[in-house]
Image 1 (cartoon, rainbow, N blue to C red):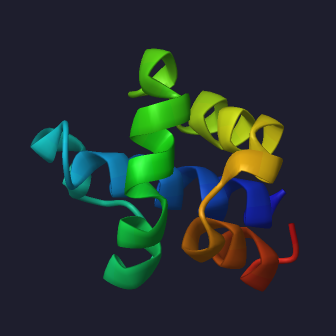
Image 2 (cartoon, helix red, strand yellow):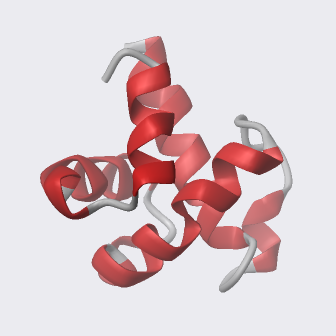
Image 3 (cartoon, rainbow, N blue to C red):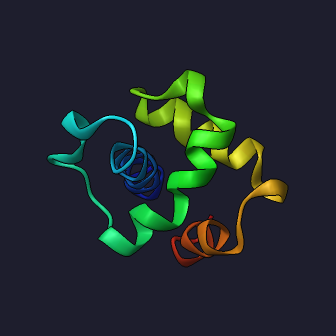
Length: 79
């Protein structure tokens, strides 16, 4: 459960770097992890932006399409 929450916050924080600066505060994940998934989240999960768990689920549903860098973030957290 903690891993899911961490990845969801990483995904949302990644999105906040490009589309929603207000979400940047208070999210976990290194800046590198956030950057690694920002394009994928914007590309595949635009409708879910603002909902941590939905973005995470969306990224997982699109796992085969994720960039290598974002896929590595998920792998590094055991997902």
